[in-house]
Length: 461
Image (cartoon, rainbow, N blue to C red; front, side, top):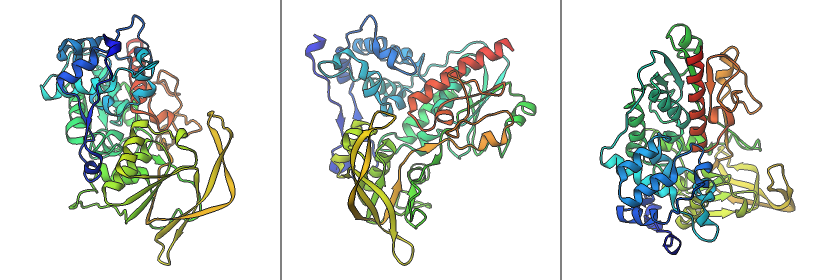
């Protein structure tokens, strides 16, 4: 029967309507839709979906409970391995991980694992279901630097193990990239993100905001003066990259990191915002990843005509297929095989155009993608008021410069092994602070591994 049922579609806001608001695009499954979709799962004896999940959620088991209508038990099963199911169900790249490994996807459509996870998490939130079981207190405290996905996963697991955990956040709101990086229309802040953070706090985790570890307090002080026995660093990757082309310092050139932070954290998209952001009438977004799509779709909602400029073809776009599809539906233009070479400005120093050269694909580069090469005499000028550089981010090397014994890798991140162990005893790290910008779920997986390492370290010390 499962093979004869097509994937249950999920309702979304109409594209013409959603392009004018910041409400969530995807509306999620109803109970009946979720149960029907769950019946498609074959419950394989060797579920590849679990292997492909970076936090090893017991996917077939929670889906079986959804099919039975036992949503509370489904939520309990998910909570064993994931502290952020409502977030993962919305922003994880399921198509390349769990759903990408689903056997039903070989000849048809995979089970909508992400949408089912989201449904269960939303049902739990709406029905006040929360799981706070944890071991007896161990009498040892752990400091966690940052409150993004790797830190939340690490803190949650440590709290369940019985450790006293305090998280330190540099900004005035917790959540890291979940709060400042991902737009409202993909990840609502006051409901979804706040509720997930409250779930972690319900385990006894304490969160202190407006604390810049390394300036407000050093890691050595956390050990020597505050009495913490271990420190996990999950401070993310907030250092934006630029192209280094002429004109990048003109008024109207901004990193996607700053643009999204102003919009998401400081609500610059609201008419009464105290920290507005300028978009003009035309915006060019340089890049092709998820952050580029987020920036482009945000600028569109703020009233601009938006063009995404990318130097390869659509096939090579690193953004999720779903995000590109949504962007196109909303009216965003894509200028493919196009590479910026200069930002042009008027006599007052304000951006007026983005000068580019046309590209063609040559031989594959180190990642396996075909390297773009310039087409001779192919320059074009794209009229624009704002250029948003969405070229990725790196870990800020600040903490490694002020913390003795903590080494930095070539990407500017913290040197650590696969289990989060750094070059200094008692300090662990994971997520984007180590690897540079990656996905929420990979950061969570790193946080969970580090929690196991911290537990082993503190038990054996």
